[in-house]
Length: 371
Image 1 (cartoon, rainbow, N blue to C red):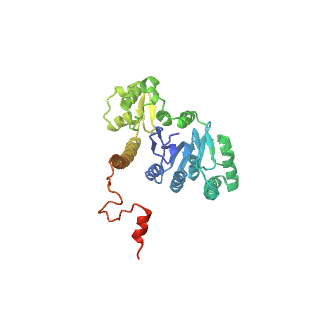
Image 2 (image 1 turned 60 degrees about the vertical axis):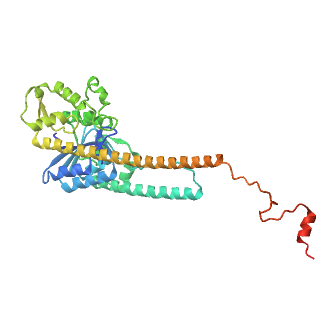
Image 3 (image 1 turned 135 degrees about the vertical axis):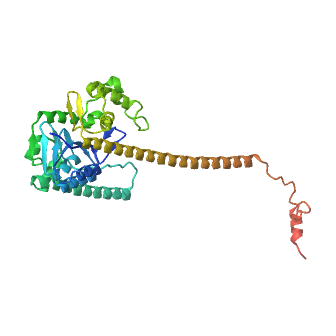
């Protein structure tokens, strides 16, 4: 079976620079389908799932196309399963696994709260639960349209959250048939490694030897950019694995592009015969398109990093100014404490101060006694 497109990695994420894994976005699927209108296309699916909104978009794109055949291989779960329900036909490779389950959301509450605040938190959680139930029912309805069962039956299966074998999925009506093909099984077994944090394994390619890649721990540097020397190491590995390919000078520039990028891009529908790789112009275009997308993702990450650094610098400047003002005020207070007050040596009874000198009670009486 030749797959024209592979949905892998996290659904809704083009590339995760933190984990080094390539994902699949709704736009990528749409662009592929738009380029193959009125054609039967075969899409392999091997993904742990991802964002519900992206999965629903991909489902609709596949349904709108009308001639998509989805092939579940490896370990496929969550959003990666219900997006296949829009396909004209869905099959599952023998030896693969499928998981459907209820959606979940992040819950973060770590605070002191009085009874009124607790009521607010409980109300917010109740609304969140109602929203999750609505989303679960929408997803269950997609499964129900495929297998003809009730939404409640599908929600029960989702609540169980158990991995389904190909036979389990067939019995529940989520797939149309099981594929028993040795070549497809081999590709399926390779793509099971989607759950591992390895670019090569995620793409269905063998891992580079540890002695040439340091276990692929240096695919990206601390700033998230491709590590220096990685492409040279990848090329050296490819030269060792496909010596005949590199022994011949190629006049096709697209073939050179493939040689440099196949280690990073998800291009698997090529033929290898006697150490030679045959790649079509269409696949070469895919490589260029994916490289362009990765470049855009990298630039977006750099822009976000620059904006964060600028914001941090602005906050640091404001903090420095505030600290400087505090230090100046502290110095003024210290100076005032050190300076002597104005000394007044005059007495209350001293002439010229406007107050009559009074030395005794008798004098006080005489001063106010008027005959």
